[in-house]
Every structure is written in C-alpha cells, then in structure tokens.
Image (cartoon, rainbow, N blue to C red; front, side, top):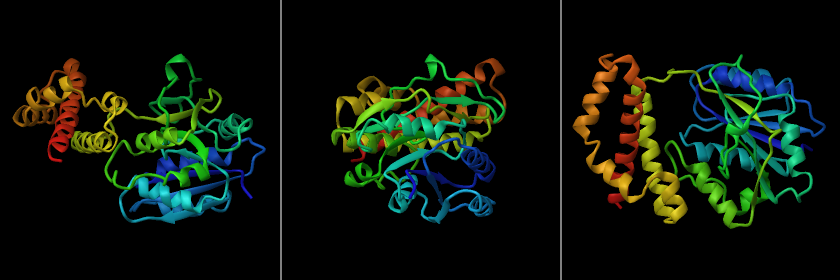
Length: 293
C-alpha cells in the first residue's frame, strides 16, 4: 500500500508531462508512492506517455473529457489509496528528494494535520535548476503546483469546488475550506521543485483568454467567500474595481491588443503594455461578473 499518492492533472502537454514523470521515476524515498495522472481531454501524445511510464512507476491514468481542473483532480482524489495526497503540475521537474521532503514534513503529525507546501522555483527551461532562496518563500496556503495534505481531510471538505470551471482560484478556494476545517499550513524548504515557465510561449490571444477566465473565477471566489482576505487576494477592492470599469474600457483594450499583435509597440515598452492589457482584462471581467450577480 502506498504512503503517498501523487496526483497530476494534464492536458495536451505530453513533453512537459514526460519530464515530470521522469523525475518522479528517479525519486529517492523510503516511502512507497503511487502516481495518478488525470488526462483532461488531451489530443496529443499524452496517453502514450502515461502508458509508457505505467511500466516503470506505480501509475494509473484516468481519462476525464470534461474540461475542468477541479473535476480532474477530484477524480484523482477519489482513486487515491494513500493517506497523504501530493499535488504537482505537469510542467515541473522534481529534485531527487522532493517526495521525501513532503513525507518528512508530515512525519510528526497525524497524517492530516498539515497542508505542506514547498518552494516553487520558476525557471525558463528544463536545464535551469537553481537552489531555493528567500524569494521562493510563499505565503500561499494551498497551491496545487506543489502541496500535500491528508486524503481524508480533502474528502471531508468535499474536494475541489467544480463550479470553478475555468482557469484559476479553485485551489485557493479549497485551501480556504481546509483552513476553516482546522488544517494548518507548513512550509517545507526541502520540498522544492522547478516550475518550467518558458518566455512568451503562449500567444497573446491565449494569454487574454486566461486573464479573462481568471477574472471571472476571482469574482466567483469573492461571491462564495465575501471576506476581507478574499477581496485582498483577488484585487476586488474599490480602487481596482473602479479601474476595471473606467481605466481599461473595451475599445482601449482592443486597440492595445491590436498594436501588440502587429508588433507596433516599442520593444522596451512591450512587457509593460502586455502586463497592463492582461491586468485590465482580468479586472474588467472580474467586475463584469461581480455586477452580473
């Protein structure tokens, strides 16, 4: 019986998934572990990657066609056999003792007392592997890129809220319910990982779509938990909401998006212009969603 269940939700990122599973294969730990990969409707070589690693890892693949990250991870939780569930993303590389770090952080608890997170080190490629430093500390209570918690605690609070059916905030919302249920956060420096973030691999359209979805899900989070913490975390306070309504009107966003897409923004200003555009889309979509309900 495994002591740890590693759950990875993935879609159409076979190359990234292959690197993540390869680093899981090389883990140095005394704790037996299983891997559950939930394929959330991939059309690339993801099924072949899962099949290949099933021969070298205690790995099960689950196919879930409905596009929903929370739903996909809930499918994994339902299949988990270990007392401790460990989440990571498909675009990570794991140091040899990553799992051992999570296991040690839970060792002096009852297997359910803590949500253990570790440093997430963003790097541009699989070859960059710096050690963690002070800037890699995070106050995030529950980020599914690198977190572990007791399986029964997850089940007791109902797992991920599948109403968060677009990009963003589903892990933050689950973390809030775990905290309400008495789960404490523990940060384990030794449970660090590398998160692969290549520069500018997404198209502007994809980034805009993701920003819009995240804004809508931020509104959903605030509507579900209308607390000071939720408002601060999402940026749904008065100044930002005013900014979302007035400073980034739709024609301005369209004009800026067109200029960026056509390469008409000076190189030195491009990063700032892109950030302003994405921030404006996030805020305006959040405001629109908040005002519609």
